[in-house]
Image 1: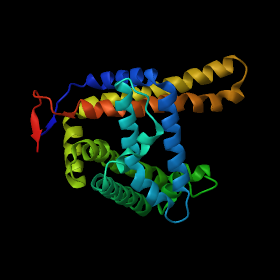
Image 2: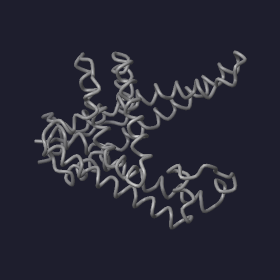
Image 3: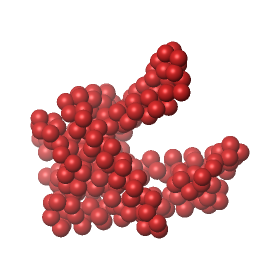
Image 4: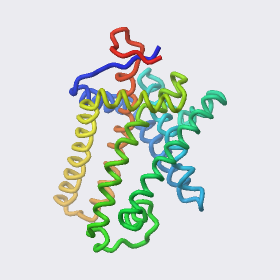
Length: 264
């Protein structure tokens, strides 16, 4: 029986701490897995015609792989690269369900891009998807582009929350893709305060790290290195962020007898 747990807003800070501590226990492994994840998704997305839809379809399974690696690290084990494809190594049923989940995510994402296209004629979509080699400032400053940007944010946020726990529910609890989306949306809505704190803290950390690195590089007389140093620093921070995702699932949906809402 799957159970929904309601957690206070301050739990968002706890999730951040758990992610950092778990990352610190296996920093090379977690960073390496994240770099492999980014590289795979980047290479896949640039394939002609099928690249982007394929990358979007595989995104839930790849994200689940990072969560499974985190779970392994919490048990004191070294997470191996094979965890990135664990969704496809647990039998055909799980693999088909994860692919179905990916297809649903791809359809949702492309639908959002289609809506932004209607808003500004495709300017935002071209920039976001990297289809433009140049991005003139007037385009970024135009009212249509800004409107498309906010439409994307407004639609992508609920899409992300709907899929937030879905891969883990499919993989660890054998829930069907459609039901996993419903349960994920309910869990995120009921614990929205904690997730908001979680996201805000990570955003603050990323901004602070970037400012500190740029300040240090400038103070040392090497402002040209700032971009490279910020990229490297944010790579580590984002790796920590993905490490912390497992704890948002673990503490929101479990078999705890004190849980409030039962999901069958």
